[in-house]
Length: 150
Image (cartoon, rainbow, N blue to C red; front, side, top):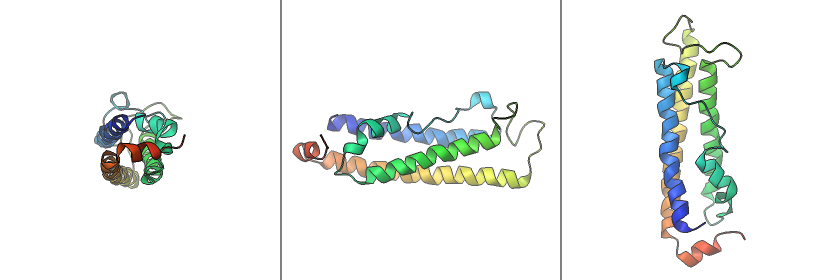
């Protein structure tokens, strides 16, 4: 994988993960389950696939390992938010704002807390991606090539 491919993957990860925040907001606003994205395993999104296939080899940028851990947390947080709203064991129901189901205030607060966690983790991930992009962009080609395990 060359330098420009890595920069492209890092750039792609931003809007893909900002989308999870948008989905979380829709969820709290009462969007029906059919209109929301179901959670995906962190290894199945493009960043996760890239990291597991190639990204972990970039040893000159140790922040990538921490970034992948944060990436996993983001996916877990959205998954938790989604499935506390749409319980997998029951018939799908609408979210806390619409529908026949009365949801205790405590549960609403918990969901809002999960959304805030998702936002905070994603912002941290975006900042880290920006830093890593700068490092990759500034690496000389020969240094870049020596930064990979073979």
